[in-house]
Length: 103
Image 1 (cartoon, rainbow, N blue to C red):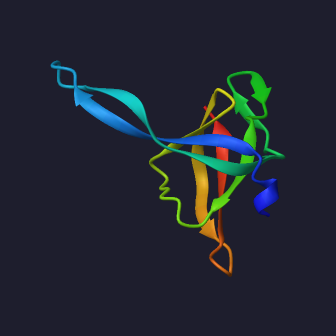
Image 2 (image 1 turned 45 degrees about the vertical axis):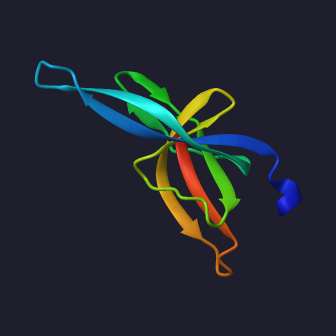
C-alpha cells in the first residue's frame, strides 16, 4: 500500500473569528500535508433546484496516526472536500479511510 500513496493532500482546520456584528467569519488553515491514495467513488444523484448533479466524491486512504476529524476539510489538487465519512481504521490499524465530497 505504501507505494500507492501517490497523491499529496492537505488537511485543514477551520478558525472562526467574531466579525463584530454578532456573527463569525471563517478561515481555513493547513494542519498537515500528507501522502495519500485518492480514488473516485460513484456518487448518488443529488437534485439542486431543477439541476440534477453528481457531486465529486473521493475515497482517501492515509497512514494510521494522522489526526483527522469530521470538522476538518481536505484539499486535493486545488479542490476542497468536506469529510462525510470516517476516519475509519482498518483491522491492523495501519491505514485510515475517509470519504470526502467536493464543496
